[in-house]
Image 1 (cartoon, rainbow, N blue to C red):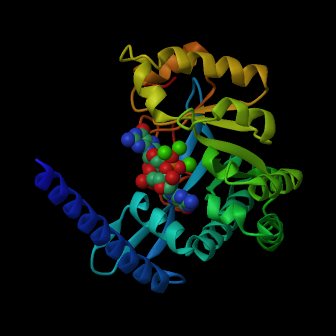
Image 2: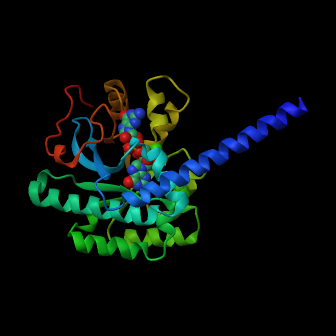
Image 3: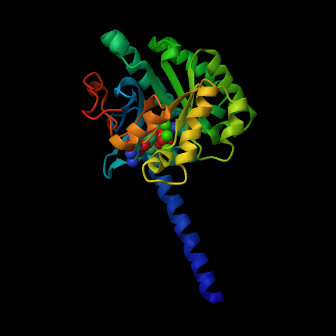
Length: 280
Ligand code: C2E
Ligand code: CA
Ligand code: CA
Ligand code: CA
């Protein structure tokens, strides 16, 4: 049994090495993709309930590898974070999304998304002068600060005091701050006292539970109360069915995002977004 355990351990280490090597290869390819058309952004509608009208969008990165085809951001974003490549990649994502947001404002006026949300990783937030960079991008692109939402996960803020200071500087510009995947981390509630948040993204796992009678349904119900009390906007993530949407609306949720409304779309398809026939 002892020998067997050891064998497994060796196998496990080899597997880890293999995965690390794989990640380094991917990161090397990703480095050469910067500035090419292999990278682009999709935009997923964030809607208001019960009508399902467009409220804002979240920018989601896509990478089309020349040999492998599409690589999931769940794979290439962590690889970019590990290698530090997320800093130049994230800078490009931020600028591209702000440029698109400004273009919508110009083209669509009142019908343009009221907020353009960009995911920012812990590594970017820790970079000294990131708030300055955000300010510079807003000036270059002409996007008003109040139209931008910077979305971060709670681990990013607890990465250290530097991240929190940058976040406060970004908030001071008038940019909105959203906490992503809220409720899945270790310190969600205490974070609300220190972090200058405007929006909570309630994680899909809580949304999944509400119509399945899961244990988290009570948390989903409590989170909207907390948001109301603290004057935070709650966005329910990963809404896939009309039943979930109806239940969320009944609980008091006013904003949602998910396949029930729309998948992430190319920028040019955002103006044609219309609510599904069954709304809420
Ligand atoms: P996230 O920020 O939590 O983004 C939401 C993810 O859920 C997206 O996956 C989106 O396509 C997916 N999604 C939206 N609605 C539904 C639904 O109804 N059902 C299901 N099953 N999924 C839904 P995606 O685009 O594959 O991105 C995965 C993760 O990669 C993101 O999770 C985010 O953490 C990261 N990511 C993506 N783009 C960026 C980026 O530009 N910068 C950074 N730092 N991270 C990014
Ligand atoms: Ca997000
Ligand atoms: Ca999320
Ligand atoms: Ca997530």
